[in-house]
Length: 283
Image 1 (cartoon, rainbow, N blue to C red):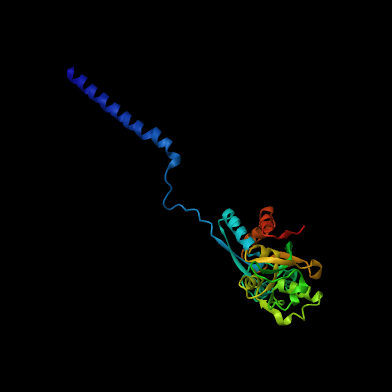
Image 2 (image 1 turned 60 degrees about the horizontal axis):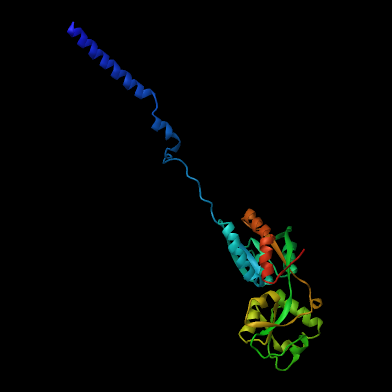
């Protein structure tokens, strides 16, 4: 009798253990269920590809240098995948570079004629270019100089030895200066005094360093320097209105990004920067 009781007890223990083991195998534990959504990804799972940086080359008139550097900071901060590389120079020279196949995504000119030339050659779409800004032509002298100049007629004075202008064939500011002086019947008589610069910023530098007594630059250039002062503003009726068109170069390999910057340049945020530097916004 005692032997049967022992056997029964042993059997009960074995059955209990079997049921316990079976229960562990079929019922998920709370720990496993709770961590199901946070399991580490498989080492073979594809990883997200980082956004590649796109570099845009912007060929821009030298007179836009300071404003565009400010705009660059703001735009690249908002668009960390975009890097703007500026090629500053005379608009005529930049036009020729684009015509010869130099890489450029956008063109920002200081004269409508340079943009029109590229549109005519089908290097820029007519629908993807627009006149955005305007400027004024002024004559500057050294801030600490003794040159007594109040108007264009004073340029003929004997004490005025050198007058700096941009190369008229390639520098819009030089072309405007030639146009104005010609209309005043002074261009021919001043030939012996003229010193030509490769762009408007070089003309400004000539006056700053004393290599020229007077220089013809844009109002915006005069505002960037403490070393010069405006002697007089050139009569706006004496030269073609200074307008700045911007356009997208057809050959761009980054059309979407170029269109994005083209649009931004026409935004209030960007235009406010241009106004800060002395430009006027065209309606």
